[in-house]
Image (tube, rainbow, N blue to C red):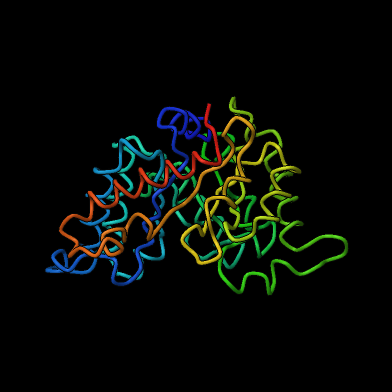
Length: 289
């Protein structure tokens, strides 16, 4: 699969929303916490996916979040990725921390080149340089895998480094240029590249600039759950046809039961209601043809 499949899913559901299962502490209802944390996490994600499959096109998982639960957590992640594929989702995985070129080589070979972690796309950090990106590109070309490179992250302190001026460019602007360069020659039928950029829902000006400058770069908008993020900011990531971007929502969906003030027995229904509300709110700003 590739970014073309994601576009098909967005067009079909008229909803450019991904559920981010990087579950925060306290988001899992108490009635699920009878066994191990890994089992509870797995059950929670699995039931949410089954409930949301008709409403959203994509899901996102964090390798590190499951790895921190130990060996059982990795097993749960592998099972969830397989289940997500079977349910028809476009599947995004946050890669392990890549702190060296050989770490990137190993991650590319294990995740994109193997079958233990089935996914359509990986999110990686480029801040060790292009050596951390290049090992994944052959799999984009040969196996139709996608890559989302962190250009501007949504956390509060991101500006301390990513918005620094280097010459005439911001650091994250230089990163976006690198992403665009790597994506050349990997543009799909949907007119967007298999090498995309992760951007911040709290940085509207950055999104506007990147969308205008890099027409073929698909934008994965992160941080809509952060205080600085909102759907109006996210709307700047889309092209005039309502494509070219996907919005990641975490607690808005996964912790919707808490916002509703329930005990969590209805967490799937609350997540579905939240997804429908977000779709309606996105459509206030974006028309998907």
